[in-house]
Length: 148
Image (cartoon, rainbow, N blue to C red; front, side):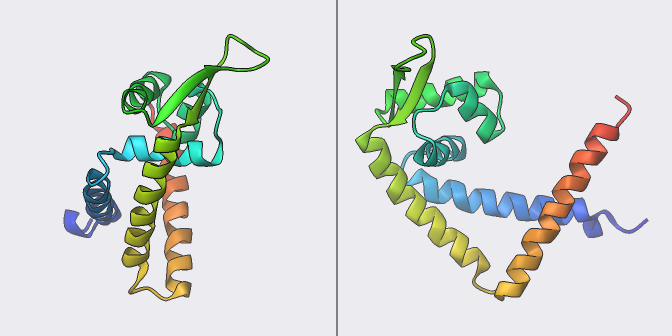
């Protein structure tokens, strides 16, 4: 077995920490957390979904999403309204202010994404994405196979 610094998990963790830190720094300019930005991103494509659906799409628990939505509500970036047909369902929508903040933050996140990929050829980027998808799938399979 090789040195821990040569493990795949070490490389993945370093990349995750560095990219997350860079993203957090960008989002700080807009007073957003990565979780809030993820929610705004999903809402920008699926405006009017429920908090439960938003949680599923962001891959977090409903409780975590309720907290995230609560902070976005308090800033006036999203609003809740009863579904027009199913009155017991609450839809979440971006406000005009939320759309404006999202658009500006997303432009900066897109610029960061482009900066991260700047030294890679299009083929290398495609390969990297495919390899990361394979590692993700393998980790998910391994997690399900653990005897806990």
